[in-house]
Image (cartoon, rainbow, N blue to C red; front, side):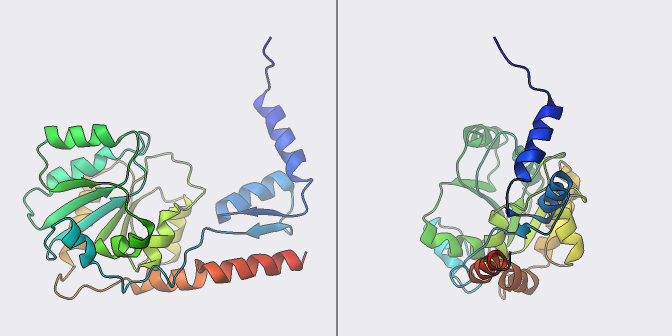
Length: 259
């Protein structure tokens, strides 16, 4: 015999359960707002975001490490997607955008990672005869700084109606490296709000729009001088202030002491 539990009952239990805690921490401002609705108060909520070691991942990391490893000309413009390759992420749109860049021989799309969608993406790229995209395995953690600075533009791809309450954890490493990011996110998501609040922190376009991604990416790449690459000061400063591991842990402990 199966017990049917209504969504309303689950919601009531969740509210009751959360109100039993002295402190509730969460990783985004959107989730804090949700928690306030469930708990009816804000004074015992702590913002505890993803952090990054800003002394480990820096803009000064040698980007040529992967140029040499993968035999890629240093003059190439690198568009990087690094991370999980799941079927629900809509990563096939990267292939569609890469197809539109075929005439720009110095632009290379690099996808680093693994996941259930990887084989399908490789097959689609081969069928489309995309010579401007390469797939590479996950890299050792000690090479993460080099991978981050290797990219001229980082891609963060999301579908429409994705739960936008959290910032992707990879964003912290991109920002710490001073990376330039092109993000597909809706305006009212945590990512969308971040882009509006901090001009220059990233380029946002609406999800699932190949033309919008292509146009934005083309403009970003045209503004890069491969002979004198520079990092994004806005994102590095943001990482130093808001994503600094030591600062976040100190603030968290201070908040606990004050309760």
